[in-house]
Length: 229
Length: 206
Image (cartoon, rainbow over all chains, first blue to last red; front, side, top):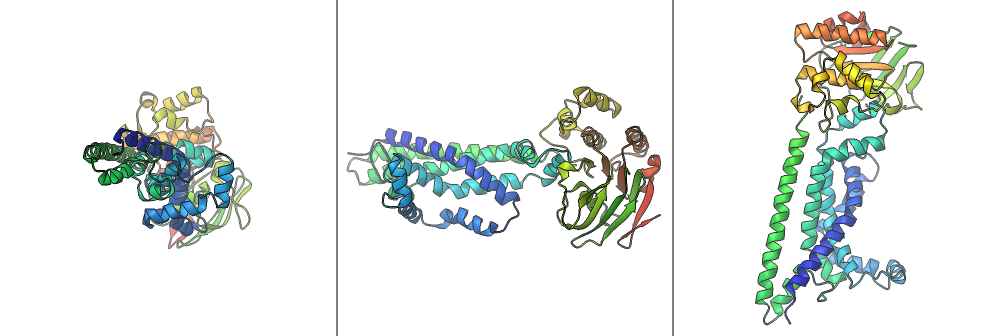
């Protein structure tokens, strides 16, 4: 039986959407800390955040399995709460989230770094507290860059393979995303048609993502170039 | 100055900044790079590298044990190149602090000749217009001390004198103490300011 390409495409989009949405808050917070924070252990935090970027995804998947597997304390706790991570859709979302997180954070960090800190300083002297200043100045000024980060994180999550295979498995209709479906179709005797559809979908989605990313990045540059004087 | 202004700080590589005065208006002149902008940043509370003592308006803003954050100082800081919020139009820049009523914003905008520009984006303003918006934005936050960094630099001679007189009058009307820094001492003319000079890295009274 060759894999069902439409099921894989739908599943990939769902997983990528969930991973991108769940990651936005933490990525915003971490990106801001890395862009503007002055604190001890910043280098260590950066290293931890970036680790999945340099680790082989299969190793990241294995680490996640150790951390969230049914025999681990965290895994058994989640399991008793009805949220089993291994070999589930939740596992696929977790894999996509963790592997894509460095790219997410780095892009958001750049978006914040591009904002002149003097805007925040002026806002503070006008009597506006740091939290309200954050909502009113760097956050809206970084919107296009944050949008670009969301698109990039989504596109990256769409193609996740190694970590997903280890922690979520490759189950038709449940965890078989595009990349895993392509891999399975290569082995299926009559998988050629499925591969064709999956390749086209993959290329199409990636291209749309990259075009959107470029458009949003350009908007960010134009937006911050306003007060040239 | 509503009490004594006393600044005695050191900012990393800069020489010490030392100034003590009770005048309602102070003008500091000196070449670029002397530390004029740093002095204003120290008073605004945004210069994190400052070490020493700052007292103003009868309060201690900086000492070995205290650091009053910028949002509690009540200073109106107008940085050198305006630093208008690029995503907000003139009206929203002026009213940003939320400390003045809409009618106050309208009245001051008219006084500064900005009434026709309220819907404009900062990108579509001239240098002089930007400086007036930055001034208005600071004044509308109801500051207790005004800090002006080269406030008239982007203007030609005629406009410079006119705006300087207008700002000096606004400060007198509000009994608002002001500290100006400039490379050009004639900027202080309308203010009857006590003059200080940066010389050889130190501040001295003229």
